Amino acid sequence: MQTTIAAAIRAALLECDPHAKVMATRKVARDWRLGRLAFAFDAAMPETPGRPNSPELLPPGKMPRRKGGGERGRIALWHALAHIEFVAIDLALDMAGRFGESMGRQFVSDFLKVAADEAMHFSLIDRHLRTQGSHYGALPAHDGLWSAAHETRGDVGGRLAVVPMVLEARALDVTPAAIERVRTMGDERGARILERILDDEIAHVRFGANHFADHAERLGDEPGELWKSLVFRYFHGSVKPPFNDSARLAAGLSRDLYTALA
Image (cartoon, rainbow, N blue to C red; front, top):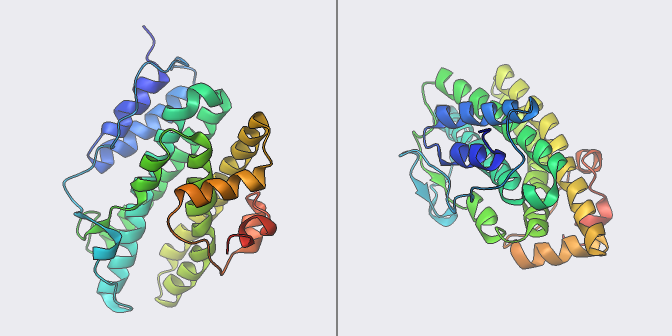
């Protein structure tokens, strides 16, 4: 019997070892693309994905402050980026597995592409971290990223509104400054990694924005008003400048949309 897409995604989500999760995610995306997985949703997504024994996960408010420069500051920066990309794998997998049945095949294809990209990003960053004498898990990391997925587990509109259109869109704003910071440290390879990630994140936000617009149309709602109402309901942070307007526009987010919440 052919394996189902839901069963394959669930298995990848439950992987605890980072390398195993990366490989399982790539395999799910490849098998789906090649038609090896049935479009069937016979397996529930886990409430919490698999996690390695380290890093220690702390509430955001309990995280130690990152020091500015020096070797420790560089390692702390890359470790934080590795954690973001690791959790992003699970966010994309869960999006496809939890909502794919109602949202359709293209939705699954798009978010499995996102998951495979995030797996590649994590691998690039972890490899770069190892060249600096460290590794993912060496430092604590904050446990706030998955909360957005948990709170929106019953609402695809809320998930799209918050994860790609707020959290990933924020990465479009802050990554250019990170690129410059890394470059001034003399880390040209790291700067190129972040430039690659920024290009991919624009596409990821665009996937989210496009599927959100389709979802709003099916509901008969105006996308901008629906987005604002869902952000107010589910997002507990603030949408604040500075904004990377050009990258956001390339990702399908108009300035009128997000400045209304700033």
